[in-house]
Length: 276
Image (tube, rainbow, N blue to C red; front, side, top):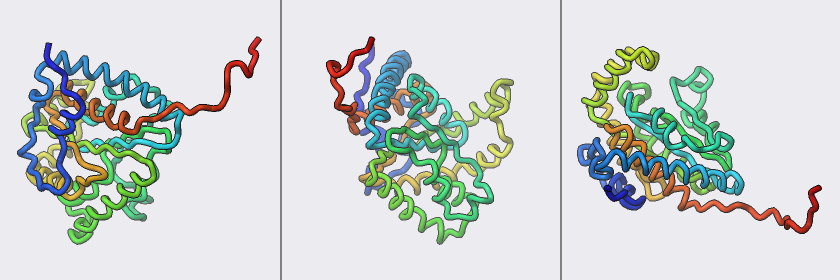
């Protein structure tokens, strides 16, 4: 039996410390130092998924705060699978998931944060962003979709936006799913060869793969510029699917426990009513 890392150990190992310039090379992609045993990772994930469900029930009943989980990562890093596993026991009543794709013409006619704000969780909800406003400083930077002067301005704008949300009772957990180039190649091949996964294969992903170094640099800059005391980044090793899921579940559970939602007292007492 292997010891299970506690939530603080997970945070310490994955935190991109605010104010300290990090290199992604400093962060492992396999996760075995946190969960040496895959079976223990599975048990941890199951226990945390159940705890997240109970905490989300309290959050939904309380309706005074909300939580936003941001999952960013290159193609095949595991955003969909992580969401499915971490919230496998959670009632859909207070959970919303939104995947941000290419902006529509209506969205492009507005500032880049407009479409993001539309999907911020209501008080009492958990929202999961599969990609997010960070696309505007990731693909935007690598593909030159905006002038570099605008890209550079966006880091501060994003920090101010996230600070605004936290000051209005939205807890934000930002996770970068960190995989190796080798693992990405294996997963792209798996998508292509597996008929049940082929629908997820996009030939354009191979063009992005050619820009691996440029995307790694863009992620590194985004993490360094936008890991703040209010909303830090966590760099989660994601080569192992089960370890990735277990680590993110620990982070989500820890954030909800910090929020400590309470079931409200409606003021009713059992002796006030007779139910026949």
